[in-house]
Length: 155
Length: 439
Image (cartoon, rainbow over all chains, first blue to last red; front, top):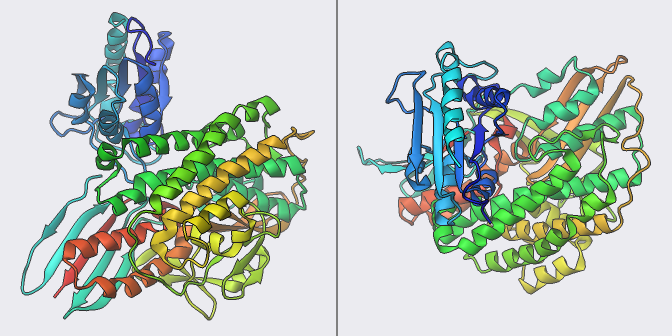
């Protein structure tokens, strides 16, 4: 049963804090928490994401993005029916079924939220054990601000 | 990861390249060469770089190995925690409370349930049903995929109750757990586990209807064996060809060999050959210790041992899934919280070896510990590394049976044969490429 439609969206911050620009999810979660905005940090496994999708009508996801269409540091925002957002979340693992699989499997199983908003900074480096690149780090406050604004005006 | 295939005839040679064999964990490539209708070359190349965990462990306090080695694998961290804890406990002469022992079995049941549910339905079943992946399969088999998701969630929940969290659990330690659950916390799992037993039986009945390739191999099956229980944490290492040793004798019995084409070592029985660890091996060597209901179902499905067809590993995994749910229920029924969550331990110099049964097979750990309690050296042999040579041997024996098939079929079956082992290449040393050269 999904929560009442008037409830605030749930914010899921995905990523690995020790994989360079992939840390933007956890970093954004930290910045949002300082604004007293509730967030959930997840590692992005598909089945756990599906559980959240089934329970909430509006989900905001923050995750690293590599599109090649914009320079590193650019803040992306995709919004709309989850099926439309899925094309922006291709798979990038094997055993690990991630956000892309969650969106596609959720579509088949009719387990998607009504609305999904995806935020992420165009990324350039995912080195093991490293912090976000200076370019991505410079966009972190703006990313958190955009997510906060989305959350504030929703519900 | 999507999979693409291209066929590019050139100079009489047909090259087939499947970019990414999905549904395995790790980076590697399979090269197969066929000339004049004969199989000439099979090579499973593991090019994922070594991860050097054994070196990371040197100089760390021994109890840290429980948490450090858990990071080797996101699928089976509990296996690493259990083998590490048992090995260090043996080095230090630690005796654990019987209820701690039971909780460790329950913890392991959770990992088996989540891992087996994932592999049976999401990674392997698509091979048998003719789908590229579980997403494509879900369109026609929604109920089965929903069942798999619920089973996996059940396994995750057990891990969370015992380990503190679902991913990279943190509660296990040398001597027991940092914190043990109250009786009401484990009792809350009973209703879903009771459903899980039924769901696993349904899974076994479904996969028993699959069309299995007609192939059998003369395996030397190797697993733990315990006189009173289906093996998880304890037992002697036994084989279908006469091995019967304590874990302390592992390195005298098995040999890890460097091979040029792989960053993962290949394991053999010394002075013999490859061997097979995992569900089929456990099942073959421990069938009588399964619950009666599982044995009865196996007989009804004509799947009682010996089973030497590796493609039937999916059926045996389903039966082990049923066992794990039943075993978890049995443990919960008898559970009383131990007086202390863990035994007191005193660091000292020592040497300890232990093996436990990860979902994919026997996982061996050995630690040399100094008088200051720090690790001097460590040795970790994961199940996939033990199976790698056996996977190559399977392909050498199986592929000649299907060389008259279209190249797409050969490639599909080769991938399926690899997935029989649910290989976790990351543990052994993220993608597997399959190249088929046919002239």
